[in-house]
Length: 355
Image (cartoon, rainbow, N blue to C red; front, top):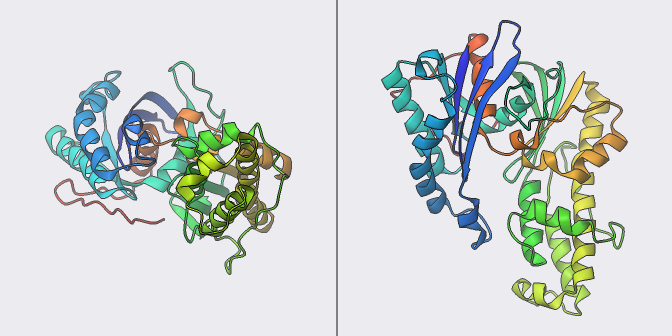
């Protein structure tokens, strides 16, 4: 079976083709992404209206490029992200997928964006150049750490479509915290890569930052950590809490910024790794996967390698950020394992969808 996946939950307009065989092996045939990131950089974050308009411009060319290897006659079904995400962005993808499903007479599968990130790890082969993929899919039970700009979750998968959400962020996602700390110290958006690069110049033990204590041991919170960074930055330049955060980039020295980036990154990553290790010890999963944009963070991979007694097979960084291939892969498993199809005449978006 060949599945077309369409993803438009935030600022990437993406489509991909995945083929799944009788052994449930997934072959990546295409992965096309058009990002509007450059339009958002000047605002320090994604502007929903700009993102939606960019999707409208890009969606048809992206889909047409993605299906080039096969053509419509060889595509068996369409999968589309219907939540979670920005309402206007989701609407463009869903309406496009609905229209194509009707016009081409293809089954339609509605995909949870966050769950889709996990399924990027089930792609094990491709004829496309410059992809480094796992040699085999994750084994069940599987512990998934999902970390991105909008999500921080720990999920235990007992099998396909049989999972328990162990914990999630109660405020900022870890990627969002990276963005906000980057803004505090004057680094460009997106914050994850900027902070990671700056952290290489600093001392990760230069000072202490707190870790949130949660009632549910698997829940996350990063708002307190972000505030602690702000207070340290204000104190570091000889000011109190009334000093405007917008003035900090000019007041801080470059070494101070480097130390703040390094300490924040260490503590933020330690927070998610701490909880991953607790879950691993409690549930003894056969595999652990890391999903979402933050999965490509070097510090995260380094800490996991040092602390987890199991090897993690990471997918290619191009499949960690939002992409259509991960949506197609989850759609492929839904099609193969006889999950319910969606009505292309009535499928609606769910911006606040959770796992």
